[in-house]
Length: 436
Image 1 (cartoon, rainbow, N blue to C red):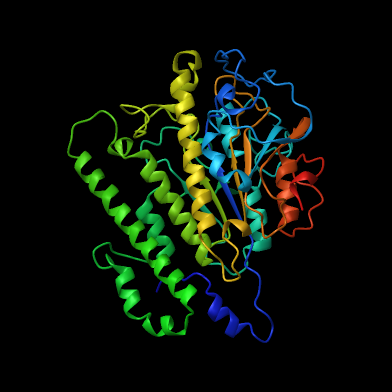
Image 2: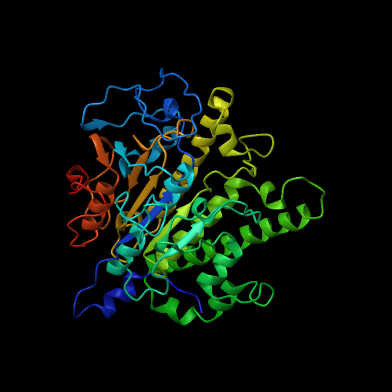
């Protein structure tokens, strides 16, 4: 069996009496670790001094004299990939988090990015970590989906030397992690039910043999969608085969880093993005979190087309003056992967003619405002999608008043998704400029 997307021609028949239902709302989080290089990311900060490494969290002044309110989008070097989708995204600046002292900066910024706990309220943990936002939202919009939430991480390494707080965004509750799936094949099997690679190698061909009767019931637009969907699944299978072949070959070579470090980083991330999109498209889940990489992980990754050899994002971030240009390239690379995800979601049409992106709230963000200073202030946040028409159109930058908590963003998104939520964590109110 293979899950299918919604088809307009079938929905018309099934919903003729009661009226076809609107597409479901979805929530997706795209998390980037270790902050960004501010001077290349934020407008008005290009002339700011290159920060020195500090081991503790601190709040530093930014190079821009921002005024709270709505401003036009400005495309800095890191934001340049957003130009083709400028009307699909809203850039939020000035959002802060409160750092709870006595915990590791990186562990808290990742594990508590979606936390529902105000600082210093959890007594059973060193971290202000309670049930995370994705699970609370899933209670409302998860419905009867097979996976109430789907957790994905693009950390392929098996040398798990750090604690779980560095590599997991989603938590059922304090101390109870919702572990991420890191391997594309395992994610594919979980979503589409395959058990053995060889036995189910061409699953799409098997399913297509039984699908001719269904195709005859579809209109021309839905037949095209049908073929497009199965072609995308075939492409995912081919990408997995390629990466698996590379891993097998690399494992035979004597190299210092694990074979996973040498997998093409962009291909791996985009493959996981495509699997996440397939899960959202077919209704396997409506809530998903996606870690593009782990926090404070010193094992290097290979970034094809960016660097000649494997690099450690974390180690470079501690030497921003030495690796400034390389870090900017890495931030640009991560933004390109986000744009790939947005465009994939925009290209998928729902039964009513809207796009998957139109019905999703997709948030790009990091738990640090800068990797060198470890600041919890002025976080990099970008929101894409319309959430089923509940969010205002993009093409703007919204700058928030000083001290505006990140929890206000989650509160706003919860309300856009139909939740009757008075407060979330240390929120002080919704961001009305985000809503229609």
